[in-house]
Amino acid sequence: MACYQLGDGLLPVDVVGGGVFERVLYPTDGGEPARELLEYVLDLVTHHDADLHLLNVADTSRDSLARIGGDVVDSLEREGQRVVGEAAERAAERGVEAVTAVRQGRPHAEILGYARQVDAGLVVLPTRGRGGLETLFGSTAERVLRRAERPVLTVRPGTDPRSHHPFRRVLVPTDGSEPAGAAVAAGTEVAAAYDARLDLLSVVNVAALGVDIRSELQLDALEDQASDIVDAAVDEAEASVADVSGFVEYGSSIHRTILSHVEAHDADLVVAGTHGRTGLDRYLLGSVAERLVRGSPVPVLTVGGTSEEE
Image (tube, rainbow, N blue to C red; front, side, top):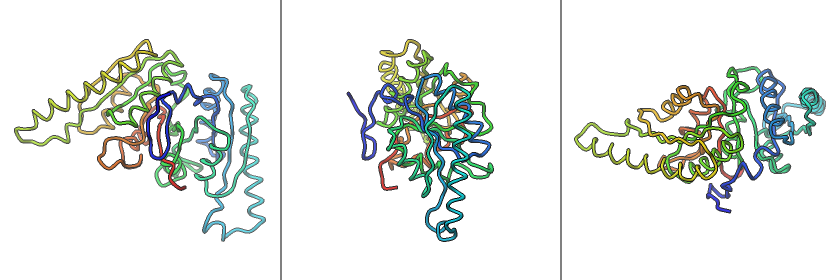
């Protein structure tokens, strides 16, 4: 089986066929965004007849641990059991038998460790937690996205993910890099599993062009490169997906151009690699993928990550 090299680990090309939707991990804090997203998670699980793991993590790390005593820790344990218990009851009402767990420590580390422990194929997260004030970036979700060794599906609270499932149209932005290639492979597998249409998009960043006479020549070169990237991705995807379309679009903001495509073509899911051609091999955050996760009106499946120390 072919693999793409991502960070210190290998991501199989058939990431979905290899079990992304076979075992789903849903960390929940019991807040309103988490309760709302649970219904979408149950849609995914029932559609794929998948195993569901419900996890609650109380942050008892570092400074916070020094400020609390044993009674408080016990209270956190009881609260965690209540949260996952209520979620499991809701799952049972939908015909899903869930495995529940409560952990204490650094939330992102516990989530990632538990995902490895149960060999979860997918982690599903809302982009903010209890109280509605904690944004994705600088939060537990940020750290999970940075370090996840397996696909992570993020959903913005206030959107309506259930109206976009089952997936009818899947969008994969690609820049020809290895992480983008992994995203193309994942998007292809998702589209094939749902018999959905697959859009493969390369964006020509016109903001990168200067104003001198060489700009037109540079634009021609970028157009040719983008077309070659899309054509190669289409050729790969057509072996598995019946309805594949390639697009080359232009914009001064790559993520805004991608989001415009989502709106214009009614995409139900965006699949993105967490590294791209930045020249610095940067993490997800500060990249196009960050902005997609933050601004997408539909769920975003990020593929990649690192295996760096947590």
